[in-house]
Amino acid sequence: MKAMELSFKENQAILTLNKETTIPVREKGQLLIKVAAAAVNRTDLVAKETGNLPKGNAILGVEVSGIVVESDTELFPCGSRVMGLVNGGGYAEYVAMNVGNAMPLLDQLTFEEGAAIPEVFLTAYQTLFWLGNLTAAQTVLIHAGASGVGTAAIQLAKQLSSAKIAITASSAEKLALCRTLGADSLINYREEAFSQKIIEETDGRGVDLILDFIGASYWEKNLASLAVDGYLILIGILGGTIVKDVNLMTLLQKRITVKGTLLTPRSDDYKAKLTKEFVARTNKLFAAGQLKPIIDSVFQLENVENAHRYMESNKNKGKIILSIN
Image (cartoon, rainbow, N blue to C red; front, side):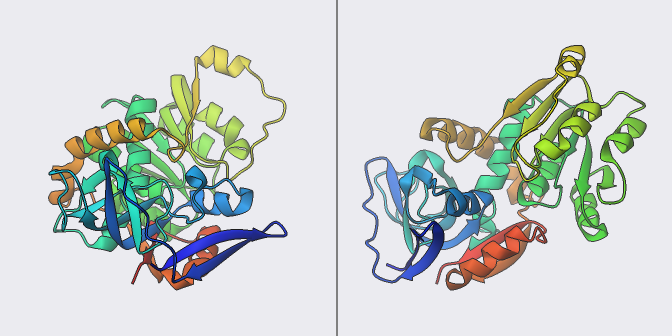
């Protein structure tokens, strides 16, 4: 089969298209998927930078859509359209997927749209409701609102709660997209201090939950933006990993809960439980068009390096997809 394989030479990451890669062998409790589309995630960029591959798989890609070609379950017989998380291997013509991670791909959705759902929507669902305990009367601040996870989080917060939604983004175009998805408060972080804006808009109270992809450079402003008993969920570290001169008294006084999470390293059992609950709560919303994946661009597998550079530029609004043909 055709696959984009990652190797390292003198600490330099190299992606090579191999047209004779062995098709993966499906194990019990797995599906063999003929991949139609895969998505690019920052997990892939981190793997290239650090050499820490998902489950040691030399083929990147943690979410795909496609057709089931081998199965031992009536839930997803051969010929089923599916989407879901995989433990690496998505940048290829075939991949093995655990049955518990598979989701039915609705007829209303294209394969490209299917590949744009699993990682970002499951991450957003997990951070909002499993880790952040978002409830109806609360306020959530979503950083990088126009990113894949950001666009998913806005929609989930809007459709599954009546919480007020504030977002940050870097341009008027990105802010406009976030508004169409349901964001109530739009903050251009390049033009105004988001912590001051949040305090003004909440009459000094702050927000109940923050989803943060930035990390160290936002630490103090995040704490200033949180209400008493607020939750700070760290999803990424684009702004650095080291916070200097931390004043822990702020955490004590506000009773702030800080949690960090990465979905890819989670156990298969955890992902299966998350997937099952997510499908139960959102399937009808996707069918009705009330939830929708946001796709920025589609690249051919052979052009994956261009797709990675585009993600590194932070210009995308929504997901970057690879077409596997």
